[in-house]
Structure formats: structure tokens, C-alpha cells
Image (cartoon, rainbow, N blue to C red; front, side, top):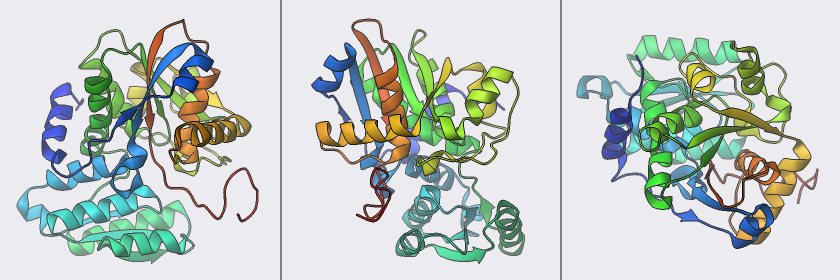
Length: 317
């Protein structure tokens, strides 16, 4: 199965009354620095503070009634956990979230606050997957993968759909790459609206499996990632890798120093709070030599920042 532009349009219709249509903002200082025109899609202002709410809503809202009544389950200690909990709450069904026992308290509290049930497991991928599978078998709940799921991908693509609708024709769209759900949906949404707009992936140099995979023309798993962009630590999946391979023009990596400087620069100039994963896309925009007058869209994936552990301090604030 391959996603189509119609899937993105259906997702937009499905979730349109629930998600925020986040603003697209500009920054003259950034434009002047790069001699280009940037359009920032502010998913940092989305519900739960990240684009993840789009995909979770689309997957939950498109469940048939019989399946929905058995609830949903996932394994996540990040933004998807809270996004799925809130999406399930909006539909009035149960969400069971498998989380490692060392997950930050604030993230656990976020899931519970949105009405989700937290199920503990050991802090490794095998335990997460095994526990989620057990819950799925015992309850009949539908498993919603954090990114490698067609309805999740289609939901994420609605961010790029809105970006092009609001900003107009663009020469390129930059999106961060972790598991690949956002950039895969972006590829489908962009292809449905413009034949000339390039999709560029932004990735930390310390977690560059997408760049290595694209260079090798085969899926290269993530190993020992090391980056402050904690939302981009996962490997590409079976659904997302083909989009990176075939539809993404290029993957550009940013160093930790470039990510931090981009984050600080964006905070100071726009007064908008973005997390390190979003700053990766900003860093790539800043380091790229754009043809004069280029129009570039940048998806700011989220704004969930631990203010007590800012990446440029190396210690508590």
C-alpha cells in the first residue's frame, strides 16, 4: 500500500476540527542572514506541543467503532505517548501507554493527565514491544505505532499541507527526521501540491541513520545515537524508509554546536520556544547556501523543552 494525496486530504478532514491549524511565521533577520525567504510552520504551538497529535488523531479517529471500543495501545516515552492519550480521550476510548520504568516523571504525568493508562516495562526496546504486544493480545486494543503506520503518516502530512496552502509555492520544505513519519507525510503532501518543491530532511550528525541509509541506498539501522535532539533518536521504519529513499531530495546533518546555536538564535529572534529536534531543521536552513530569493518552508516539529536542563548550559538552569 502506498499513501496518496487523497489520504492526506482525508486526514485533514478527519482531524480538522480537533487539531490546531498552527500559524506560519516569518523572521526578517533570518531572511536577511541567508538571502532567502523562510516560512516556519509552528507545530511547537500544536496541542501536546508537537506535530505528533496530528497522526495520533488521524489513527484514532479513523478506527471503526468496534475496534475503537477496545481502545488503543502504544509504546512510547515521548510526544507520541501524550498525543495518543489525548486523541483517545477526544474520542472517549481508553489509551494504554507502555512506558519504560525510567521515563521522566513529567512525561508520565502528562499521559495520565490526558487520561491515558501507563503500563511500566523495562527500559529497552524488546521489553517495550513485548509488553505492548501482550496488552494488545489481552485487551484487543489496536496498536498505534509512533511513526511507522500509514494513518499516522497521513496525519503528520497535514502540517505540510497547511504550510503550502498558507505560504504558497515553495522551492523547498525542510522537516526533521527521526523515525520518518513527519517527513514521509510531508513528501506525500508536497507532491500533491507542487511538482517542483524539494523535500529536505534535517538530521543530527549524532543520529544520522537516514543520511547513511540514503547514501547506501539501503536501510541502515540507528546504532548508539548521541544528540541533544532527543526526538530524533529512532530508526526509520518499513513504511518510512521508502519515502526517504525515493522522495526526499537530500538529508543534511547538523552538529550539536549548530543545533544549539540555531535554537538560541531562533529563541532570541522570534521569541518562540522550539525544542532541539525543531532546531535541527533551523540549523540546516541556516547552513545551506540558498539561491537568492529562495522560498523555503521549515516545519518546527515541537516545543517541548526541559527548562531545567537547557542544552547550552550543561547543567540545571
